[in-house]
Length: 349
Image (cartoon, rainbow, N blue to C red; front, side, top):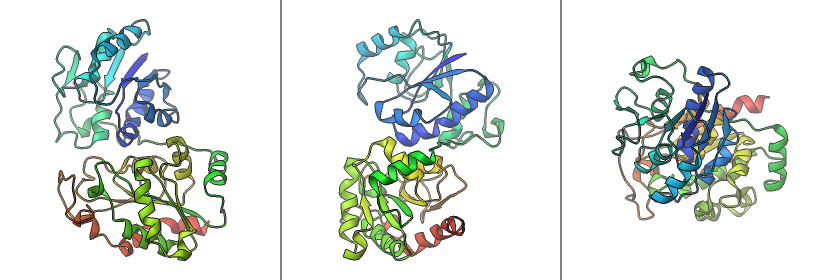
């Protein structure tokens, strides 16, 4: 069997989609799963053993590019795919499988995709409250999987593996001081500061961990570098030499390897939070307006801190620096109290 998946465009969503690939591999031994995704997600797919190929999706995010999608789809007509699974809900994401003339084209109804998808599912959000469950349900016939209770228990969670040699190489390149164990912070988040724990709280937590003998690495994209600089500027001079701002300095592949080498991770609700979860790193995840009820970290080693309930579609915080009050209210001492028990078993070893 040969399946084409039109994958998500965001790092966190791509990580959660691995549960679907693991289910497909369990149900169809020998299946070939190809996942078409943006270039920035392909390093993650390369670490998923269930994925055979990650063909490029040379289309700008948000662009309709109808002619390009038609040409791309037509180029796949001789590839022998029996089924396409379309994970994004947009109209344009269903075009390539349609133009490729793949016999079975499966996805949730989404954005007016009648005709483009011929195995069109109507989503009951209460029946599948989590994103990972909605992805997983697409591995099965819609008549047999109508709610969470019909899915396998437990679901196979996303899992990435990194070898010891890869970790050692990354550490020697980016964090040459090997005398102190490494704690990773992921201080960035999409859509600005409203989903970020304040930089001064990260700095206070870094100070406490450095006093305990750790060093800190800050992960993220180039647009998160300024947030990392803010954390560094808030540190005392003595602590600053033990804090490495790697945001924008590493590729995603390198960041994955370094996160795997960390003793623990503290993260906002972000794509890298889901990477840390898939690497099964001890993780404290900090939520404010966004909710863990839909996309929680999928790891038994994760602890979530959130002081409000419900979902708040907020893009701008109420603080003068753009932070949201619910994240300002999470004190560094609380985060440290959640992180230390997760670190303890490693220190004993």
